[in-house]
Length: 462
Image 1 (tube, rainbow, N blue to C red):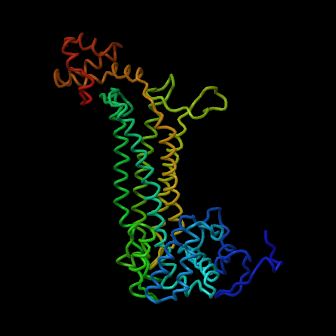
Image 2 (image 1 turned 45 degrees about the horizontal axis):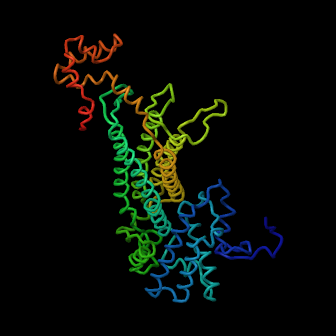
Image 3 (image 1 turned 90 degrees about the vertical axis):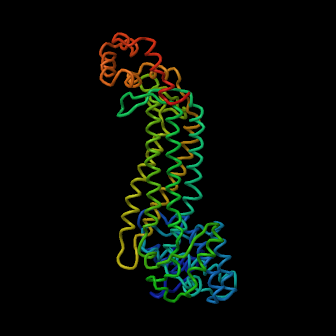
């Protein structure tokens, strides 16, 4: 720890409120230091993904300002170099602020402005001001919303969707592998008509595919930027062409198409785009919970459960019961789903708050969004590699269940009527005999039973 009474360890910075001691080895300035001292809340720091998006955005803004003649070329170029250093992860230690700060993210915006200005001043040899130059044509009120949109889009396109596609592909492999395995279906936790294990897994693959489509449908809305609105949406102190030009430059830098929001008043006060995008993550979490629960139930046992699947044995499952192995990947994935669904409430509540021209719950909104995206991507990768890829079918158990299911009687109903078929099913259950025996004893010929109760035909496969 630095000692406040040792002048060698500190320098004095000034802002509109006066003088502040700042650690001598840090690039940040007075406003960052004030935030660091005034918001000692929790352990959650502003996510590095937000910082990197901010730096990319600040570079795009500097290029736009240079083209519009708003800042001098040497300053603008130095700002760009400083931003490149930040996105290159050379200055991660310069961004220490808590998530639990001002709801507009002003202190994080100024943290970026101060660090970029200090570094740019070193690069170009002239004084670059954090507000006048780095923050030129901008306000925290339009930069933070823009940064969180860039961050959210990056996290989804670069992490969630690739992991989701990889999981879907692995499930498709299993669906093909299991395409010929006829098994009993289950509805209401009771025996139902048969299907193939491959068909069951195809449903899981379709969940992934549909979730991907729903998430992608929300992305264009999140690719709108508030830049150009400045403080309240009017564009005060901003060149009229700045918003569109900055969005264009950011698109080039990000490799993704961002556009200037049509209505800046909406862009500053509403975050419905992030709510919609996160709702896609929630839908994915719900499906992943369903998949994880199905797989761990189908793999339950090994002798006293359903036991239709063999799941990979990755680690011992008990500190007291030797030889026990648990469906840990399913458990981890389902816990992630719980967290994401809970995060959706936080995102929605945060987006609903703030008064008049500005939402002031943005840091908590993006904190929860990024946690969801990060957890989903990581959990899907882990589940794919450590569970799905190693799943094997227990063909003997599956075949025994399928052949002995009383609900195979469903195939008889079109030929002998629902009521007569129901009586045969009830007789088989009551007398503890096979469905075939009950049918024959009820007057159905064995030849007709074998003709009508064809499990593969019941699964609609040849």
